[in-house]
Image 1 (tube, rainbow, N blue to C red):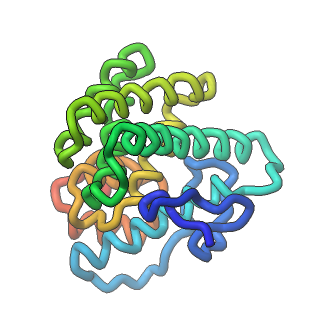
Image 2: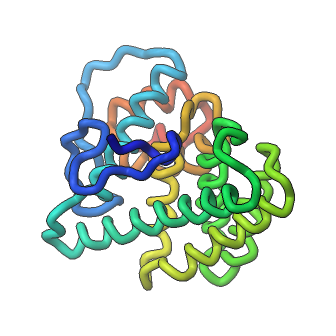
Length: 226
């Protein structure tokens, strides 16, 4: 049985993740619209389906086979970069005395959220920004300074080495999707909400979930002006 990265395993390839039937030609494609009738729910109850919908989109990009279009090829490529950035972080931590059993629950998704936020600086400044962002996020979870710094460098090296030409923003979106899909509880993780879920919401979530998010996450105009 394949396990998610949050559970210490790799995602399955060649099948749709988490039982989803979602198929995408590109990571940026919009999700199918939700039902028109809405029932307003608690903040956590709204965030859970939002997380699942974004996770299903990421899985669909990773597991798309066979690749039958340029858009599908691009989606698979950028999803794989995000996956390998996560692998670089986890492998470096484990190699430098930080086994998984010692990790806080939000360690990996927090590091990925930091990568996504740092990528806003652009490719020219990414080397410094990503390394610093990952180091800070990991240190906040109790990771020793040396291991945190090395993991930050590993994430940066992997990102810059593997990112397809002209697809910087696509990779950033894939990192955001991976952070959301691996987070154990988005409702308890403000960095993942702010740097990953909110930026993705208006372009990728169904209209019904966007409306509920706008109600449960006040102050975010991007979710209320469609």
